[in-house]
Length: 258
Ligand code: G1P
Image 1 (cartoon, rainbow, N blue to C red):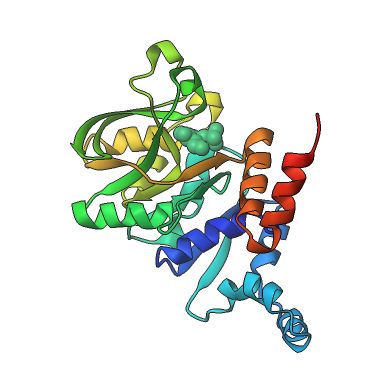
Image 2: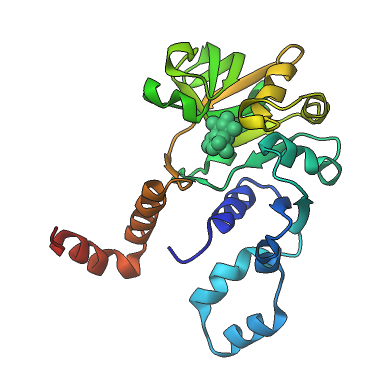
């Protein structure tokens, strides 16, 4: 729609009550850091010109209790490595990981807020999962589990992108995790895995030897914006949610040919 995916990710974190955000970005991705830097000149100008709608899309950075910092991942060595890069910035406390490519419309309660509720109720780390068709198992981390309650499972294993014939279940990890700080040590001890990358999945498997982790089938609709089709679908659906666009855009979609 009218904002980058990373902004939806930050907004979801803020809505879940998180006030310290760490962006892990590649060396050349300076635009991401700049995007979140406050721009008093722009804020003043929008205010003076009465551009309230544009102001509101900036609002989340205007809250003084929110800190946003960037950590550079010098080399693209994988998701696990990216998380490990944030070790110092996060410190010794539980934290959340959001992969912005997975855009999740959780309705009234965002996916991260749902996970935090489960984590607090059970006193354990939580990973968001979704049921997928088995032939797609080689695109995801796949968990094996024991059911704890409706939509909540205890992890007994996790494997990165298994071949469908080897997949332990059809519960796939999507890009939201609440993790204990012990994951950093597990990551530091994890070598390269699938695709020659340091996988967060492998460190989670290691952590499972000593720690209880849960999987939560969150409520909401996920768009895989890492694919062109998913990205386009998200744009259409998020545009249709906007009152100022809904009528004209629906008319356009239903009227178009071919
Ligand atoms: C990553 C994780 C994978 C997870 C997926 C969710 O994979 O490694 O376990 O299921 O995100 O989107 P990627 O999509 O970066 O290949």
